[in-house]
Structures are given as C-alpha cells and as structure tokens.
Length: 83
Image (tube, rainbow, N blue to C red; front, side, top):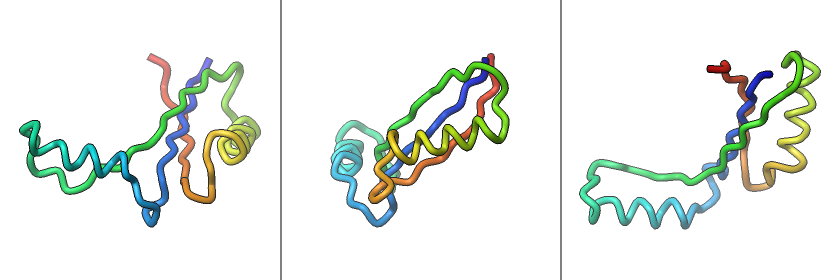
C-alpha cells in the first residue's frame, strides 16, 4: 500500500485571516522572525495497488473536485514512501 499526500493551500492572492491571526500571536509567544504564515489542509490517502499514472490522474481528479476549492485554493499531489 502506498501513501499519497494532497496539500491544499489558499492561492497567494487570497487573504488568510487564520494565518494572519497566528502570525500576530507568534511574537507574544516568544517566536520572533516569522515573516508570514499561511494555513492549509493536508490529506493522506492510503492507496491499494500501485500508484501509477492512472492512479495519480484519478487522485488529481479527486483533489480538484472534492478536496480543494480550485477557485481560491491550489493543491499539490505527491507520493510518500512507506515507513
């Protein structure tokens, strides 16, 4: 079984109020030097069988139609090694 990760992030031009709230809180918590924070989502999919081009195409379709709102979010699909 393989693990495929889909990382979903707001597009750079979309405001990220949650990321901004975290960024403003960091200096008060003693974490200086952080210039920007963006909040996102991570999905880990356990895939039965080989992760070939057809499987990746299907996962990209899944991400584009269900996991991400492509009007305001970008996504990246990557295969991770099993540990």
